[in-house]
Amino acid sequence: MEKKALKMNDKDNVATVLTDVKEGDTVSIVSSTGSLVDDVIAKQDMTFGFKVSLEDISKDEKIIKYGANIGISYRQIARGDLVHIQNIKSNRISIPQERIDTMIKDLGI
Image (cartoon, rainbow, N blue to C red; front, side, top):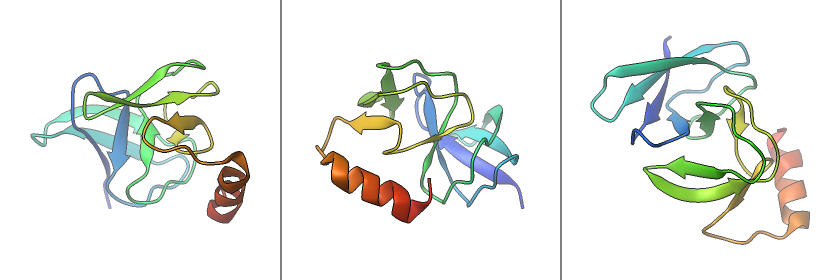
């Protein structure tokens, strides 16, 4: 089964995986019109709906999805990495660190 992720805006530095992805899988990045725009090698397992990094992202850099800033990285994120609570701080909600630690453990990330 082909692995795909959706990049909604040209400015996005993350894409949403459309299937479960295993470490080492090649993920085809498609635009909102369905055109192939890139391929990325997954560096971790990812569950449907999670984000994959489309580029190397430095600490304290904006995470862009749908052309909007959705958060800030709090560590280096490599191209192909899972982008989630273990490496970004959301602009939308403030989650206490204890809860983040529990979620990371529960998700196995």
